[in-house]
Amino acid sequence: MLYLVSGSHSAYSRFGFSMVQAIGRAAHGDVQPAQFSRLEQFYDAYKDRKTDAFVAFIHAGDNRVAKLLQRTQSKVVLFDDDLSQTVGRMLTDPNKEFRKVLCSATMASATLSYLAETTNAMVYPRPDTNSLLLPFIQSLAWFFGIEPDQALVDTVVARLKLGAITPRTTIIEGMNAFASDYKDAQAAIDALNDDEIALLGAVREAYGVGRGQIEGGTISWPIQSLFDPRNRQEPAPEYIELLGKARRLLNGPEYRLVPGNWLCEVVIRVSDNPSKNRLIWLISELDKRRGMLSCDLPTEGRLALTQEFTVESAANPITFAFDMKEGAIEGVFSVETIRLRRVKAAPLE
Image 1 (tube, rainbow, N blue to C red):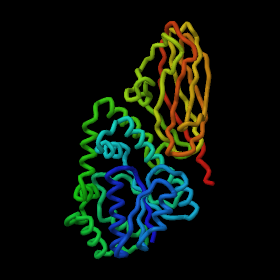
Image 2 (image 1 turned 180 degrees about the vertical axis):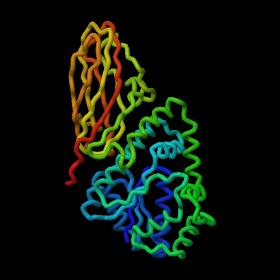
Image 3 (image 1 turned 90 degrees about the vertical axis):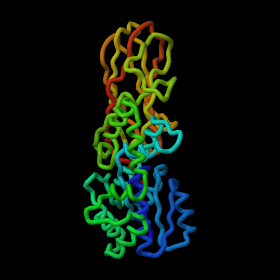
């Protein structure tokens, strides 16, 4: 029996993965758990398994996994958590920097969205304070073709050491009984500064299964996600002085997107710029250039710049770069908005 699970690096995903293992053990006596991000790792683990029941957690990183699951019509459970919970859980690991963690969290979320639209998936959304534990256990068992009788539920609860549960016990209460991950993640979020909380709040609106990254959907990236090329850990200033030599003005955000064709509109503002110099806007996916647009900056005014580009993998960072190709004697530059629309889903080969 093959049990496939995926989710973000969050307390909810860890709890869900453990829950599926407990259900498998209650039904089969023993299971072999595995975690992988590359297709080769899955093949090796499955080939070397010691039990018939195999429970595998799919981490972000390899489009080929989604294509294999689609081709074989394999069933997979997806635990779709809020982006902030993923960030909070990652920040509990030592020496993690907020902006790098946020980029990694977008990769996990974009990968999950891609799995949801391309595979035979059952999506379990982030639980709220009223989401009940017992129906959660029963639904997972039914999805894998297992009858969730009282004996199975009791065995699962005992294996996860959840204590006594009632029909009113919530998923969050179960998570807190299972481990401290959920509370630790919330504490890490509460420790963020105001600028980090604002950036996280803006980015989280664009990520999650069924949100703006569906085909035809629209999302926005906050301007604070861009950074000064000289200091990647700090957001770029709201206004950039053009005075000086030709140089890169802005970079970022290195967030991830669901594979497919995307249309991006960036609105920029220029003022007090008698030099009327040239601007190049570059779009890259990892180390591949996906788009380039050149324009002459006006002395004063706003410009809406539009490019279409292709995203190959949800694992690859998407980077915008704004280069001033000639020096300036004065002037001010700013990016006002970044809007993206997914015009076409990626074809499955």
